[in-house]
Image (tube, rainbow, N blue to C red):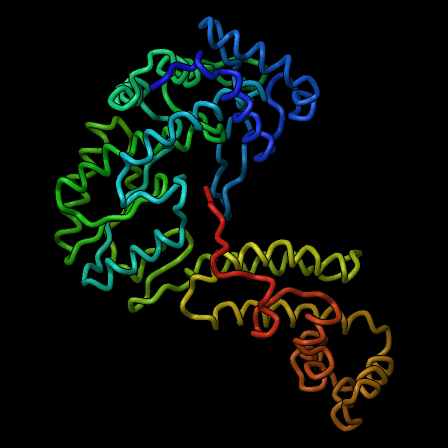
Length: 426
C-alpha cells in the first residue's frame, strides 16, 4: 500500500468532501466546516505537511450525550472531533475501506458499502425459513467505550503494513475526550461519532465473525447487534455460554447478561423488525414508538398551523416508512396512516368554533343533512373523527391532494417513495 505522503494533498481533499457531505457540529475548537472551507487550501496544506512529517496530533473530542429511545433508556455518549481531525479520519477511511472491506464476513451488514438493514433482515428470514428458529441474542455493554486498542491495531496490521497508517489510527484512538472542561485520556474504546469508528468496529467484530464461521454457525451481524441461529433451545443455551466466554476472554469485551438472551425468533427483534411465521414484520416496540411519535406530532391545543404540522409529519414519516416498508404486512403501515388521519380529523373538528359551522361545512361538501346531524350528538371530537360524515369529507384523498400528506394508503399516490430507499441506522 502506498504511504500517505505520495498522494497526501489529493487524499485529504477527498476526505474533506466526505466530511462536508456528512455535515456535523464543531469540535472543541468551535471551528465549523464552513469556516474550515473558507481557507481550505491553507488548512489542507498544513495537514499534509503534518502528516508527511509525522508531526500531526489529533485534538481531544468534545463529549455529547444523546438520549436513547425509550423511557429510562439512558444516554449514548458521542464524541465530536474537530473539523481538521474529521478530515484526517475520513481520509483514512477512504484509504482503508477498499482494503479491509473485502476481508470481512458475508454475514456482516453494518457500515459497509453496498449493504444495508434490509439485506440483514432478509438474511435472517432465510435462516429462519431454513428451520433455525432459536436465537442467541448477544448484547455488548458499552462496546465503543471498551474496544481494546492493542488487539485492534494487531488485527489491522494483518492487512495494513504501512506504519504511518498504523500510527495515525493509534493516536486517533488515544486522542482523549473533553468532559466538563477537563481532558480525560482514552486508554481503550473508539469514539462513537467519528468517521473512522464504524470501520474500526468492523475490524474488531471480524474476529468474532470468523470464529462463528469456523464453528459452522449461522448468524447475522449489523454493527454490534449480532444474532446466532440454531434449531433447539438447548443448543442455543450452549452457544450463548461458549460465545460469551470467547467475547469476554478473547476480544476483551463485556457481555451484558441482563439484555443478552436465548429466545424463539417470535420473541426477538432485529433492527426494528421481527420474523413472525417466516414473514418480516415491524416489531411491536417499533410500532408503539411510531404511535407515540404520531401523538407527539399532532398534539391537542397546538398553536402550529395545520400546514406546519403536516410538514413535520411528512419529514418523519417518509423516512420512517421508507425503512419499515420491508414489512410483509402492509396493514401495519395502513394502521399508522389511519391513526395519523384520525388525529388530523380530530384537529379539523376542533377548529370549528360552533357545531353549526361544522354541520354547514359537511353539507356544503356533499354530506346529506341526515348524516351531518351526527355533529349535534353528544360525541366528543375524537369519537366524531371516526364517523361516516367526517370520513367522507376529510377523506384520504383530501389529505393527500389538498393538504399534501404523504402516505401510502393509495397506490396511485405512492410515486413519492421507492421501496429501495433504505437508510443506514447506527
